[in-house]
Length: 447
Image (cartoon, rainbow, N blue to C red; front, side):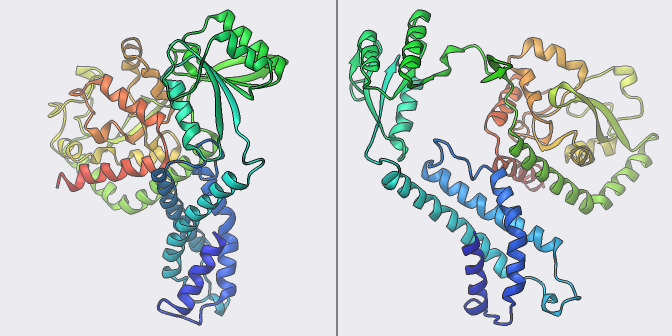
């Protein structure tokens, strides 16, 4: 990243619309201020992760490069704005060059790609004992096992030699088929470094025997998740005192990802509130003029971990409309709505005050839509995995909303399927994609 920044500085100083008067000291100071923030931002975005996906398929690597370039530009602009030049030092009187910022974005993306490729080459060719292969024996065969073996084959630094597979049906091109005693004999004779177990075909006694043998020989064992086919909770080993415990926990985001999503929410919601504040005041005045009562409507909703909060909306219905009808889900052309209320719902303008909920931490810009407490228990009883949507903060928009799944006219089961898909595939880029689609589908296409 440092090389990318100073390459951008040199290009601007001598080659692209050259400006030799630019001060190297000024831009060195800017980068030194940017570097720690940039390192933290890239870490929060998962670009430093060390796992079997460290060397992912090309399209994932390209996605990470582009995302890294965007993050680099955003951090540089943020730091440059906070530590902007002042008139106290004449050498800092000129604003920072925008050309350098955008060249840094492109070069940082390129540097990420080149460094990852070099790391792949070094790890593959010059790592510890590069010619040694992990000797693997497999118990059981399923689609999960085949996927794992394909990961081993396409990951350069994971060199695996399959010594045998103890299963009823083994594809001919995967590895030699063995009986369970033959596979266990290989372990006992020291011909195996690692054991992979799929429990679909194994009896409990056989699994215990394999684990005991692996423990005695001091080799690692991995067991596929098929041992727990009925749960979508995430298994996790931990110790409580001296007792090892297998826990099943909710799929909440790691701390770094939560911080990144929260910073993203704060930056965009605060910016949005500052930009649209005149619009908010105008809408509030129109709501008050058409119908007596407050301009804003506070409604109890259920958020992350089942906690309730007050969600802000512009009032679109007549005052005390639910005193007669009781709690009910919104419908198209709701007779309880005022004329301005129907217009606000048509253009989703009644949702704008929820930027305040985002700023306060009740909601996120993107996430599952929050429901009213009155409907939650019925949904939990009738819809599988409904409560899983409460693993994330609710959002103003979401993956279900951009697919047109909102309101009483759509299938609640289909909405939950989309919410769960979002939770299981979350990334900041996914959030950006949903926000762009929300704007394009909700305002540009509608206009």
